[in-house]
Amino acid sequence: MSANMWGYQPTIGHIAGSSLIGYKVEATDGSIGKVDKHSDDVGASHLVVDTGVWIFGKHVLLPAGLVSGIDTVEQKIYVSRTKEQIKNAPEFEKGKHTGDPGYHEKIGGYYGSHQR
Image 1: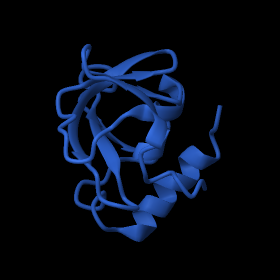
Image 2 (image 1 turned 90 degrees about the vertical axis):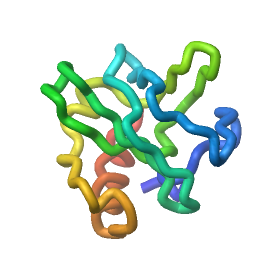
Image 3 (image 1 turned 30 degrees about the vertical axis):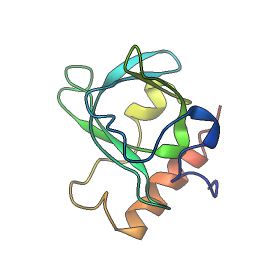
Image 4 (image 1 turned 90 degrees about the horizontal axis):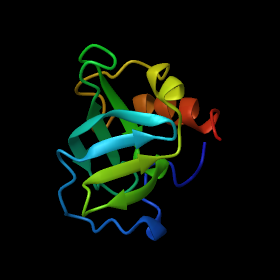
């Protein structure tokens, strides 16, 4: 797992504290939904994405390290994984996405093993 999996890359231009809620999220091969929640917590930054009809209302947890770019004008966030990789990620567990190191390790391990 990448040491930076749970932190935004400095090159993407995210300003800590700025809201990303409602931004569209784009995988490398298309749209996956909109940001429902996000966190800028050091070592635990992430996005919770509502996939809407794409995966029938499912939510997914994306570590901030997967964010490859943010377009504040278009309100889009680009992530460095495919739709299939995101769809097959471990199930989102509400309540565990904030502060459960084991859950973060499971999610980070999955995405770390599915790099482009």
